[in-house]
Image (cartoon, rainbow, N blue to C red; front, side, top):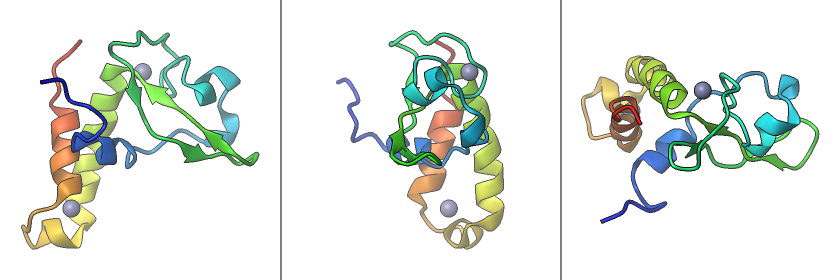
Length: 108
Ligand SMILES: [Zn+2]
Ligand SMILES: [Zn+2]
């Protein structure tokens, strides 16, 4: 079974912090290249980060390469578990599960 947009990591992708949005190039805001490292994206490995508000109005549609998504997910996971109420009480947390799954995805 192919995982579609309903997979738990989609919510987690929206949690990953972007670089300063106002400094992004048009190609980064369109998702043509990785929003973090600027690498060209192959459709198969690119991860859609969801639409984000643009400082110039409207929305941007950034995407990341597999390597950056794993790195950012790992950083965000560590930050998340030290701040999230549910995680601090060791309750089930969909964000934690999504971030962990993103951070552990195999290299493309
Ligand atoms: Zn990248
Ligand atoms: Zn949590």
